[in-house]
Image (tube, rainbow, N blue to C red; front, side):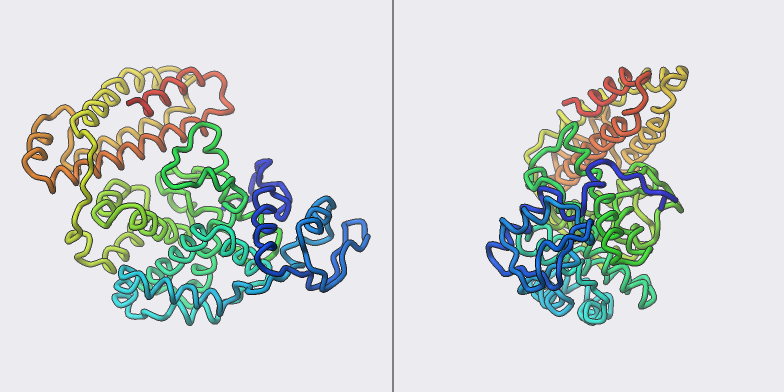
Length: 424
């Protein structure tokens, strides 16, 4: 974790006054009772609301119009609060309805351990309130967080973490996307492509989550670090700070692998997961990935690949075009001092080329496509691999934008590269 965490304007906004979070709380208030569990004061000492008062929309607007002595999350309580017992109950229902989680639990040797860990977890009231809001108004996000937390727990068991580490891991995984409560939910709709400036709102959510937890004084330094770093990647291609190698904490590494499994199996299948793990072997923690493979055992190889309608030939030609155009551009970057902020991209493209060779793909080779055309299983895996390569190229484009936003001298080249990565 950086010695000082730089807070973008979005993250500096008071934790309880972000408009998207305010909307979620007021929506929850329409469905269940929210009351002040102690007197609420403005920062200047003026009493705004008495203990026991119910918070409706008008009172919420009145409170958020003032700078408060303490964050509202510390002062409010909701009926049906997501405390340890309630969260354990939700996790149990999720576990019972998900065969993959059942198998992971059985193979970890501690299938119900997540319930006991949740039961002994110190869940501060402000975090419980935030999770209650998430459960009430952002259920897909709540279920993603809970499922990621259960997966992370099983990985922690497989990795033989200490009890304290498992507690911190579970809490961090539960809270890793608290910052997304400050993101417009329309940006997070499944299937919606996030472009340009919109990506900044996504990239800031780990910092927002960190700021929220820090402001509420509700988590240990290890939990804060894991929430802040859960989108960092070991090759430096992640966000928000582009940290690499040992700078990325252990708990964050485990959550990154857990979230990968959660997202892939929710959107695709285990065949796609195998492709993603192979293509991201330099980005994800090898020890955590090995533990995941041990828990999955033969399922990665036994999974039936999903059928795709994508035109493999077209996508191979696009990839070939990108690699050919990169060669002269890469030389220009190497030879021109003004383009120094872009030199990281040589490592990214070298990694991509290496991953393609390991996957048995070379875009100007007709043999790959000929083999795939005679074997539906090979074709499905080829298309899954090309889909993941498309996603990596998109990530490269966003990394270019992020690294060059303050370097005017190379923004022309940056724009050319972004257009290349997003071509087709």
